[in-house]
Amino acid sequence: MSEIELKELKEQIKQEIIAEMNTKKENENNWKRIKQEYEEEFKKFNYIDHWEATIEDGRVISRDKEVNAIYPLQTAIGTLLRIVYKADTVSKMDAKYEDMKNIVEQILNILKANKKERG
Image 1 (tube, rainbow, N blue to C red):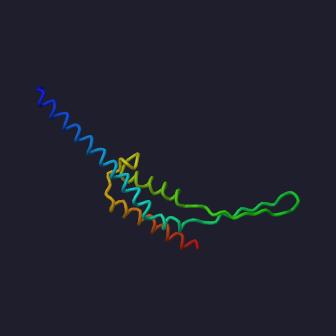
Image 2: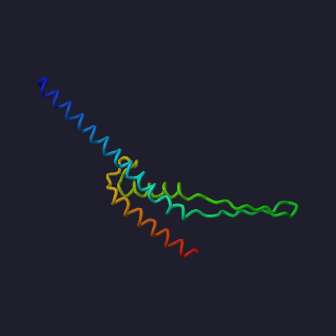
Image 3: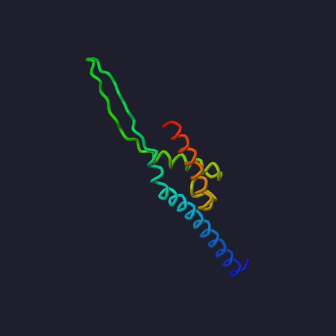
């Protein structure tokens, strides 16, 4: 292999690595965009966790705590997206922004319908 061929091969490999890194970055950015875009929708699934206990002297202790649903929803939806796109990380998902967005909307619609049924 001549020096020119070797130089061309190195440049080709470099370009392929750069393209792969850009694809991973784009995939991560798509997921970050979706999480930010739907954060208010995720917040609508926050709920109040009511806890109550009776202690030995008969007094009742209770508390209400708001449970933040954003992180669990992001984690669950991210997991479902990775399964759909057969990837073990978000950066490996070969997905376009609009396709991911459509799936997230479908998931949210199912959750909203179930939330309405349960009150």
